Image (cartoon, rainbow, N blue to C red; front, side, top):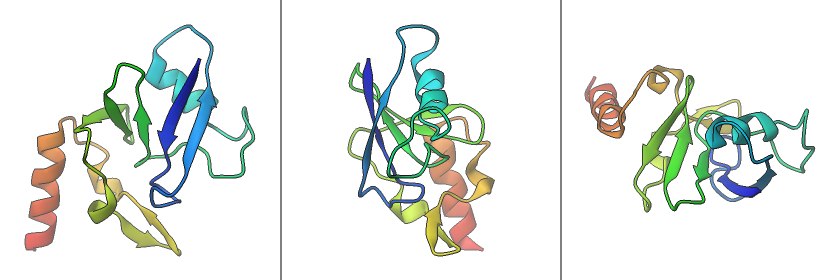
Length: 113
């Protein structure tokens, strides 16, 4: 099975990585595992925190520090990324968000300080 990943973490959404996964286990975990360049070499970074998996069922899931977070179909993490050595990344402080609403609330709190 082939699954597309929007590469936001280091490519700012300009690259779609195709990840070939076996038909076994949890699809999102398999995409993260097989999306590492150690297993499937591509001309782009490995799947990372902040990237968005396009699930075959039509949902989208952002890779978090621990697990995945379902995000709206038309939403992008672009405004939530910060510069990190010339690359845009999702700040580590968002890694513990377990709902989309929690992510937005944490961002609003972060920006009000």
